[in-house]
Length: 175
Image (cartoon, rainbow, N blue to C red; front, side, top):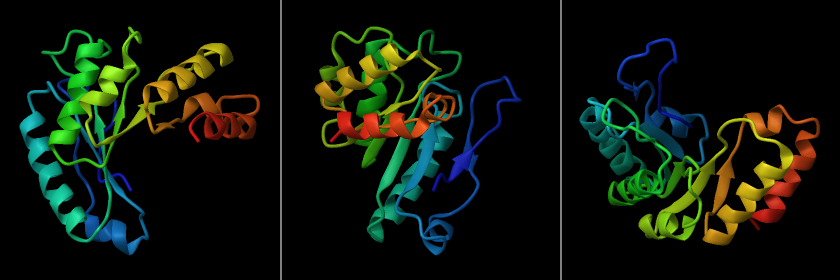
């Protein structure tokens, strides 16, 4: 269960604050809790502090923690460079995340480096923008070969003509 969120209506520096608790997630039967940090935002210190408390509380009761690690804000010029994505992976590890969700880098020639940057944190690929079938599947295969553990996908499934087949394909690639 995601514990923070924001809208896309405000166009200033990204800031996503906690809007529910670990205890509420447990009460609702969540298998894990998640949180987004926008590294590079002028508000990152607040999100890091909230995440730290969530991570500690969740791990104390044996609940896994997922971090949406998204570099954004005025200081981030290109959030899809391999260096920035690898930084986001490493930050997730250092903050204690069990799983990190990352954007696909603009240059995918060294996806292994991104996975290595996450050390023991499992790396999941964000679904990203809508892609044609060939490009989508190509990303999945490259990510799986590099050691990504899975994918968190939305529009590339739900906007597909055959969403169930697409889910099966993803499961096949990441088994």
